[in-house]
Length: 420
Ligand code: AMP
Ligand code: GLY
Image 1: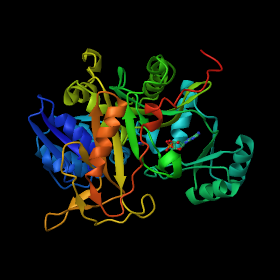
Image 2: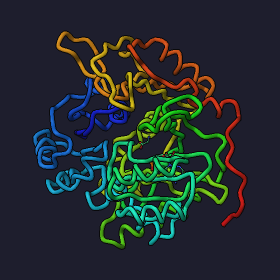
Image 3: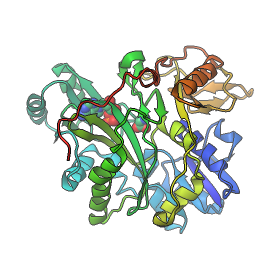
């Protein structure tokens, strides 16, 4: 099969590794791609958020399957435009991608479907904001309604900071603070059947010990040996199935990757957010452990035949990824720094570019996602940090504690107060 992958980040490099390894893929292209993806796929320039341009490229390349990585093209309608050309596309329609594109829409769907999530208010006016903050209390959680590339959410004890963020955003969702370890669960779906992947944990804060600002994600690992045994079936039953049914009832079935971001609260798993695409950097670890060929799985979802797909197979052991970010990320990241030691297996490229003289340089906030497998989490951690040691990037920032609490047995779900 001929596959076209849309996007240019670490998630897309990880997807490219998986697609290239699938024996059913005899041609792989990526647009716009990055220097890491260029080792695996033919690159084509494209504006990923231009539905007509992506659809035209898919036709020109005679693609059998288009896989859309990031959210912005999905929200812009890229999957709709590709499907209108009669080409299978892994990724939801623009209408269904509103589950990520609007926090207020997602909350409305969750309320209608009875999905466990934080209590919330959608607000636009200052007096509504003040009332919601007062009612829900600190810590305050204020979310920009629209796409904000991982920078839309403020969690703070300061009323002043919360009010200011709401004013800066215009339309916001203000919600109850959820406590408990966070889990990312990816579900492949054709709108009806749902196939969960292995849960993973992401590290959203910039610094060790969860200090510093929120980021797009600084590292991830799987599996989660500490998670309750019934986590995946419970989330499928309480969250995924009702959400997919609600989207079908609205006439906008969600087909693609439903990313369920959860907090494992004392009252059970509650949804923090939905995304309409694979998570970055969780994809780097989840796909490293997936033994089932990736293209066949995504094609089954894209063509409505997921119910016929055989059960997934997984590699033994554990995977971890450590994000290497540029100087000043997540503020205004410095770019153009030379990177050395990054052209080795396991070093996934995110924000990298090729300079005219051929040197590899940084081109974004999250530059690399250094990924390793091991017989267990401790072994995977040692292998990943050994790879990080081999990377040279001036001003590099990375966490040294990815998966450390899990390795040391310090992470536990909060005690259950009630069970359904
Ligand atoms: P989101 O973009 O919605 O995933 O939010 C980014 C991060 O903010 C999450 O990964 C959480 O760490 C935190 N967060 C978001 N919503 C809540 C909430 N209701 N309670 C506690 N933390 C939250
Ligand atoms: N790692 C979080 C996200 O992809 O949204």
